[in-house]
Length: 249
Image (cartoon, rainbow, N blue to C red; front, side):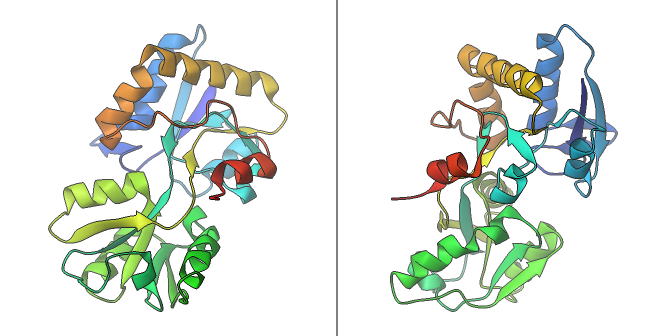
């Protein structure tokens, strides 16, 4: 099996010198133990990684990819391995913001082309319920740029998935504070080109094995600081299924 992992998307992938580590690389190590065939791994930058899987250069990407409507038009996804619900992040000294309603009209930073950007309409709906609206949206190529501008006051808040947001607060808790959810549920899962039923089933069986033995929860605790026991236990293969799982009543 040919798999790709990203080079630098902590805590999923971390380069410690020449040695890869992180949640995804621990999953790859578990897959090598589980499989009775060779697992070949290439480490790539995020740009073009999913396109390489879609083109057939790799069978799947063991990385922190987030399921989205757009990606479901190209891929099926395995059962999820982590939550990707989106949260807002603020400066720790910003006492203007104590809840979602306080985001009314404020400037937000998001990564260009990200799932977070595509799900901003959910935040818009939340704000409309209290008579508010989203302010100016600034798109960035990377999260370090977003966090720099948030720390310097050029942004009022940022949005990231819960795993990335919590890691930021754990490492820079003197500067940033985690807010509340600004979307329904979201999921990190592994993409498989549509129509590859055998591979999707094999990877699902592998993840189920990790879950049933408790190893998945151990790795979640190790890298994310918490386990996610309530994730869906089946693959996500359609926009309809995804919307059913992510819609908040």
